[in-house]
Image 1 (tube, one colour):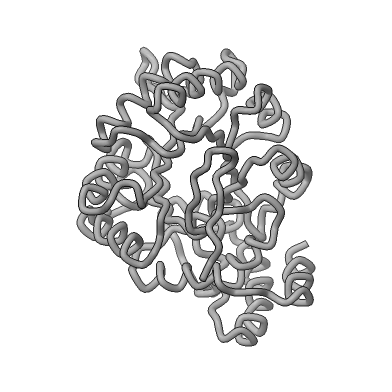
Image 2 (image 1 turned 90 degrees about the vertical axis):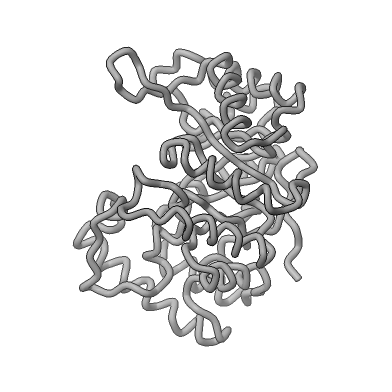
Length: 312
C-alpha cells in the first residue's frame, strides 16, 4: 500500500499518483474533446484510489474546472483534494496577459469556487509568474495567504518558477507546493530546486512526468502528432529519435519488474528528494490503474543508478 504524501506544511495528505485533467474539457489544448469521456476518466480515477485532481482555469478555458466540479458532487468531498491554478486574464486588446496582482488572484479564487461549486479549494497555485514582475511574487503569495486565512484555500502553490522566483515567493514561508516541468528529458529541477524544497518543507510536483506520453514507451519513429505535443521540444524530429533510443533502454528494466516502462519512470521520480506527488495525465481507467501501480514499486538502487545514467 502506497504511503500518502503530504502537501508541504498544509496538513493535506494524498495518494502520490494524482490525475492531471488538462484533457478534461481542454478544448483549447486538444482536438475532438469528448466531455463525457473526460467526466468518466475523473470517475475512474476516484474509483481506483486517486485522491487528488489537478486542473486549471486555462484548461478549456474554465471547462475543465466545471467538469471536475460536476463529477466531484458524486463523491465525498473530504476524500478528494482539488488543485487549480490561475494567472491569465484578457487585456483591453483581447490578448492573454499574466497577472499576479493579489486582488486579481483573490477574485479568481472566488470565481473558481463558483465554477467548481465548492466551498474551498485544497491547493491553489499561481500558474505563472508575471514576466514583467509588476507584482513581486511574495506579495502575490501574501494575497493567497489572506484567502487561506479566510478558509477559501487550504494550501498555497506556485508553478513554472525558477529557483530564484521560488525563493522570492517563499520569503515569508507560505509556499507549500511548487509545480514545475520535470521528467527524465528535462531535469533542470535537480539543479538546486529539489534541495531548496526539501530544506523548506515544500512539496515538488512535476508536470509532464511522462513527457506527454513519450516516456511511456509506446511510440516509435513513425509516430505523428498534431496536438500540443507537436510544439514540445522533446518531440522535434532529431531529438525525438534520440529520446526514443533512451526510452528503449528502459524496457529491460521494466521487464525485470514485470511492469511497463511508464510505471518504472514514475517510480523513479518518487525516489527524488521532495517529489511527493506525480500528476500523469490519463484518458482511460486502465491507464489510471497502471499509473497507480508505480507508487508500490520499490526500485533497486542499481536500477535507480542505471536510469539516472541513461538520461544524464
